[in-house]
Image (tube, rainbow, N blue to C red; front, side):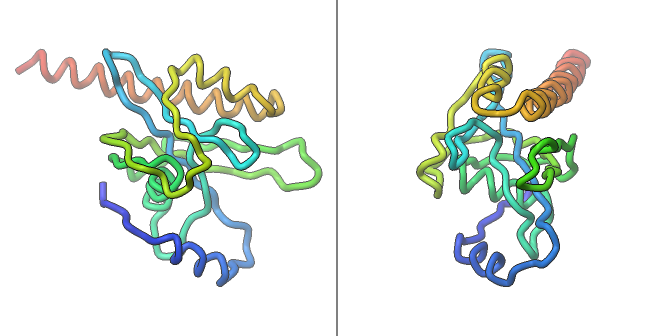
Amino acid sequence: MHSVFVTTKLRLINDLLGQLREREQVAAVCYRIRKLKIEFLLVRTRKGRWTFPKGGVVRGLSRAQSAALEAFEEGGVHGRIEQASFTSYVLGKNRSSQPAQAVEAYLCEVQRLGTPEEADRTPTWFSAETAQSCFQEGRSTQDANELGRVVVRALAKIERRMNEMEIAIGGI
């Protein structure tokens, strides 16, 4: 992972330049492994719902770097982000006021947490089951299910990696 240190001012400038096309969205699916249990870091949206750190792709950064920046700004995350998206999800398919929003998701293994730049985000660790329950609060069933599916895919990928590491260690 490449460390990403971009100021909020750069983001403001990027926003002011105003890309006319719809902004591409990315999310950091942040996790840690504690006592062989996988936990996910969720943050609050401005409306108070739990979600993954998410935002637009920043001009000049890759999608993965943009996801890492969101994790840092919203969750205070310092970690390793994968360079390839492991899944995508769509929110808001049934809303008429806003178009559906496709989001590319990137796994981010959290090494440590610092203070988030966005103080109102309340980064909190949850088990996979509790995270899926949190997604139900204040969302359509379809959106909650989409976010829950991301957790299931993340678990499968992380558990597969854990098993591969166990096999590699056992073969030494």
